[in-house]
Image 1 (cartoon, rainbow, N blue to C red):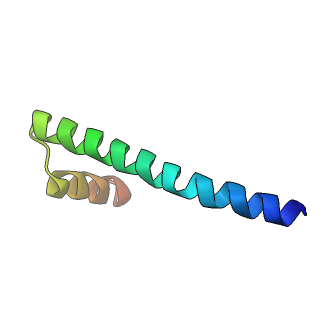
Image 2: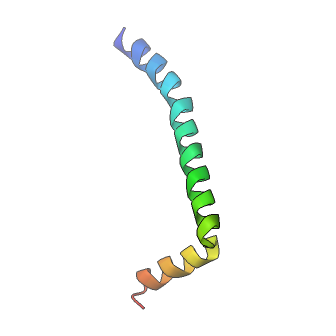
Amino acid sequence: MCNEEEDNMSSVGAPMKINAFAKMKDIITSEMKAQGITAADIRKELLEKKHGK
């Protein structure tokens, strides 16, 4: 009985989570564009942090 309820909850929750991530991605992307930041800039910055430069 419990497993059936959990299955119903997760199938309802998944599209909402995906939608929330899509909205966050749109917000981040538009913010990056507004500030003139590219994905390449972010990758470069992350690599520099990872290698301690």
